[in-house]
Length: 394
Image 1 (cartoon, one colour):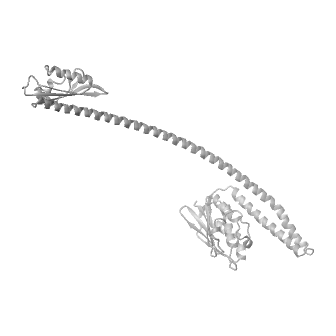
Image 2 (tube, helix red, strand yellow; image 1 turned 180 degrees about the horizontal axis):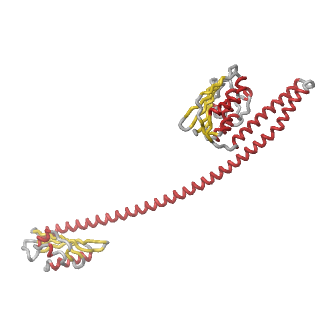
Image 3 (cartoon, one colour; image 1 turned 90 degrees about the vertical axis):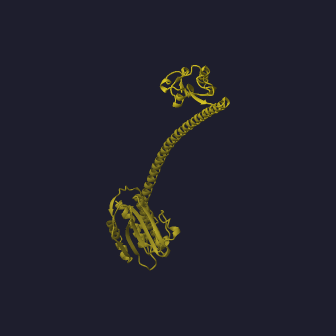
């Protein structure tokens, strides 16, 4: 290989040294023209290849070799940053005819040109790859920007939802407070209606005919029903509004308290009540939990088959993170299409037969939800119902 415009030899292989019968030490570092001073045409060709960057070939008969020998030169430029920095020289000695040597050199030149074309194709492919990498990076940057904008928008929406939830909570609290106030204030005139209707029947029964006494009794009964509904509404409002702090509560204590409060009703109805231990502790608000269990057991004592004394079973079932409390009865049961309605406010499936205001189970659901639990029912008509609620372990 010859380097630069002066064609300084930088590398020779052993075959070339043998060809001109000189060691590499005498060749490397010297101009190529000093090796073959008589080959002026070859040096001219070397200058042209370096200047134009185009490969060429040349065949001549050296003066210091037998006339039957020919040297074939093939030269192609060595490029760096699209500029020539040297010339690669291939020298082939042959005893064949000059035409064959020319054909061989032409083939070598074509190979060099092909190599140049492949290099250009590789450069084009590299440029295309760099462009694709750049476009992909731009797409990734755009995606990150979109994700950031989406995150910001999600945060804004979350803030709006939080604000709206706070507004709705405040509105519900105001409505519940209003209901509590109205229910509390209405009890006074209702008690007056009960008192006056009772006095009317007792003190004026002699002057009243049977129809008058019936009207007075109906007024008294209606006043009692409305008073009971207001009491339940006050209880529902109280469960909805009171501050609930969850602590570890003994189920055993709550069960014993509820059964003690219902002891008179249990005895009067000759009910069979079974309380199955053990009773673990739960995370609850004791007053709310007592109200929930009281309503469920009261319903179990009230809804019974005709002529059949109530049979109620209370038990607890431990699960992974919850305690499930069951209140099971042998009552008339609930049809499947009604089981999803019974926890709604003012729902009375058979009010004429069993009475009630339709608020008791709504209080149960509200109380359990405020303690972070769930409530449900399993029932088969004619075979009884199994109410349950779940509360977290302490």
